[in-house]
Image (cartoon, rainbow, N blue to C red; front, side):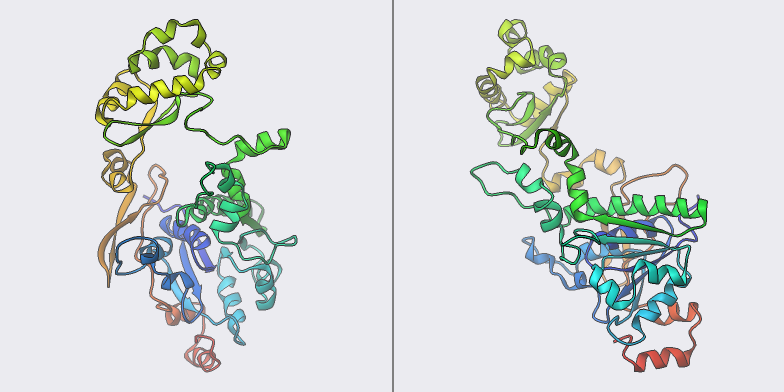
Length: 402
């Protein structure tokens, strides 16, 4: 099998999750990824996952996820010679990916114009919270802020009077990795077709909006906030969550309600509803949504999840359990689609992590190795781009490596 990005060189000047995560997926596809870090390392390395969970970790396994298969070079961008060293790395690269805000790109001379001067065929991928232009171009933007709150998701998912919900760690970042990957590979294809380098611009804000694009498509016309989902009065009682007798929850989701209504009525044990003229269309049922939903909730509360799973499948209805993450880990379907893979780490040993979230027939895609230690490959990478011992020593004396 052939790795899709075999022979592609990537220089990453980025930290935290989104841009490094996109570069990690490129590494999974065979790209050579050089991670340029400050001498103290990517800030995400020292972030304690213990703050988010109620158990202890031997390491930051989130960092391992977003940096597997790379090589690490330490460069102090604020020291003379540091930015020039990055430019030398870019001379041999196909892709440069960064999440430096616009002001820092200008300060360090790592703007698209500057980088492409040394390599006109380079694909320059820019990631930021809010973009490279406009009043907020230099505003820092973690996914909780730019993707979740300002992008509209937080308010759209709020269930008053409860406060707006937070997203899960890295949720917006990992959604954005896929935009970064798609944009970068499209630009690489265009570069190969035209011979000209390209600039890709991806934001947390724009990705957050895209994930609820249906809401925005409607709001652009109506100029209104979308109606929040009311569990007790859904527009369609067959598109709702219900609690079962054993305290579990399930989701039924049937977007063609008139088609599924007779089957659903029989499944729930209320076949008379199917013939009731009050309920024979979605529009009519909307006038009785509170009482229908309450009656359906009462029926689901009479039996456990296993009972309803069997009934729902028997009638070929669309549903899913509201699964806890430990359940997902052992879900046979999750295992069948290859959602997880195993990494052998020289210090942490063997552990499972998330796999590449897509497959290509006959392609060699998968984890190439663990995340590197800080600066683990500095010497060998610099030798590969032609620096001799004296030049490396001089840069070290200048503090370029910390």
